Image (cartoon, rainbow, N blue to C red; front, side):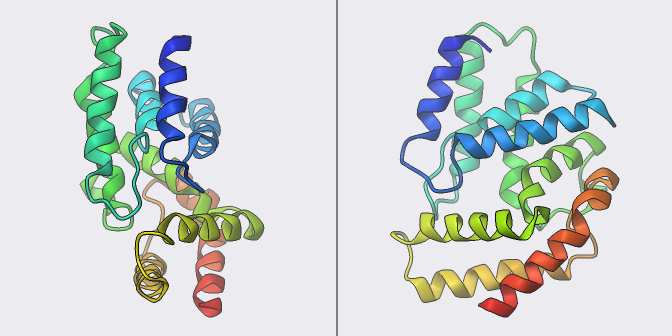
Length: 194
């Protein structure tokens, strides 16, 4: 990625200001991307890298079109920087669009690489208790101005319960082995505190 492309990307993640879906989140997912690259590896590393970079580039809490708009931004920026010949743009967009269905996708419905990408994005759920608590509070902060607190709490509890009830929170064997147990502990703790 060129310096100009990174600058545009960082600016996108800063507008509007966000408590969680910001460039720090991208950097965290990129650390998981690097770990997965080391083992088990990526078949389409450029596409996954770009999907990580752009997956929340357009984000307004409560909007249902964030992922579609992020995918469009990725397409436009890759084309603007002349990288479309090197990258399968439709795959980048497909991966980004899948993030809208976290917690609703099951293993057979996604390929192995998409499962790894989605798990890297969701890894925060399986982080240590303090990081999970910061994430949970930051997401609540993003929604504070968008929906009344009681509605947010109701919907958040519903999402956390559904996630906890899933046979597998993480779609890949890699993600399941690394983050599932901690994720279940975090979800139980969050639900008990709510």
